[in-house]
Length: 196
Image (cartoon, rainbow, N blue to C red):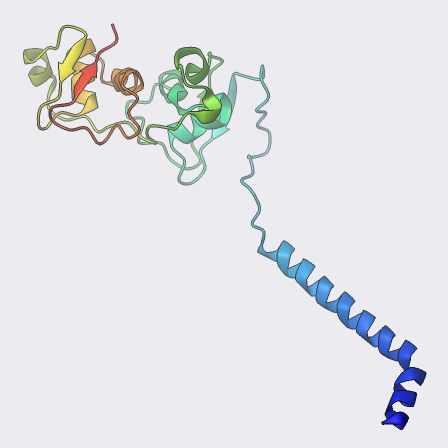
């Protein structure tokens, strides 16, 4: 036992150096694994400026993007998808294609100017417009007047907006006025405020 202690005491500096190298290698491996596991954040395509005052500009649609997503990039709210749709004369806002170039107009952010909820805490209500149903003739027959409407089975926000305003894209106004988190889910018996 004495001999072992003598040898350990004599080799104390060597043992300390070996343990120090092991600690450095372990810490290095942990750091490398940590940074390897971090996924890169979303990157904007080259040439797009998102600072205030740089609009109008253009945007090249990336795979999987919707007008709602694009609106959030430039206006900090998805509600301006309507302005992008109108500026590009898109007949169907759900039919944009990867690689398509869109004009991003210089307009006021609808989320900041028109909602009572601050943009930082607002929850997007949808990534796509509700699908229109019915025919224009049916909408003319069942025109909605007044500032309230009780939902009946089979209604969609699109149909209600067409019958109330003559413009299906105004479903966003109805969703916003009634604080709907998901405009694709409405129930018979719901009473909606129709902003006029």
